[in-house]
Length: 366
Image (cartoon, rainbow, N blue to C red; front, side, top):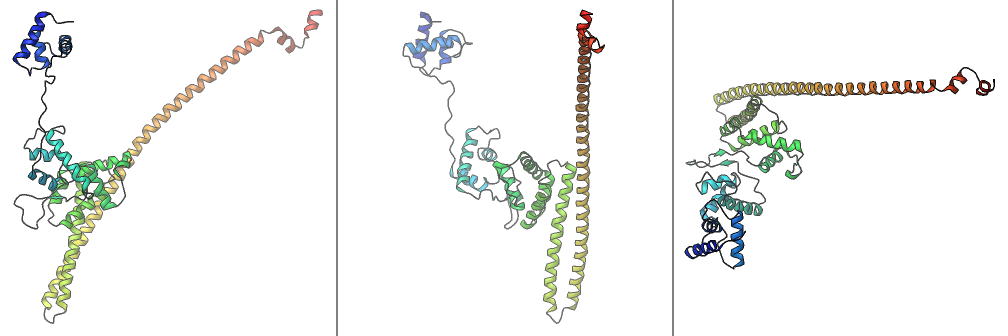
């Protein structure tokens, strides 16, 4: 397909009027048809005409955006928050655009800086787990920030359990367990409860207990998850009571060194006794709840095992049925072969004669 003289003239005409016209625009103008573009056969013919005549044209119909640059404040924000926030979330905040995606130039630029910082900081997984809030009082705890990435979750498992899991060497079951633990730690009930604690040690103890109890249980229901949160709460409560008892005992030792202070010592002893009773009650609740969770899970696993066993029995029965059918078919085939062989033998005169005790020569010669 070639351009006629009129189409060639129209090509030259549009390039004179608009040197920046794209190939699609030239094609539509030359053929006086807005529906044709550079990908059509007309567009390919026009492109060949331009090449043959060394006519330059603009071959890009999509203009590339200018590269996004990060200013000093944005870089400082990323350095302060990259351990706790995903690069896409930071990009949306920095550029005030919630429509950004992973492929957006802004997101890619932020991710590039995050990767650069991570390479220069081997301890980047040792993230601070609390994001500061506005108007936060000095020394107070910010909001707890749960792990959002697989490596962050895996780091916490190894931190509290020291089991040495490596991200690139996880088995399928282990990977599933890490992913589900990350989901558990991002639930509202878990985050709400851990944010009620104002001391960092209490939050770490709660997080440690939760990970130890749930890291290898990838099939928890919401009810079971809430019970584990309660169990971890009892763990922190028991620890807090013991700390209070120790503080009171320290005060009691100080009071014992003084001559006066009998009433103080009696009050301290009563307070210690009350706390010990509360501690015993807390431990009792903790043990009952843990036993209930273990028994319920054991029953659920047993039921699942029975269900799987039922399925296996059905499969085995089906296999046995198939085997029986195969044996019957084989027996029938053997029986048929025996009948055919018997008929063949019964048709042999010599065999009949031998069976009857008559010699062949005797039968022939008399």
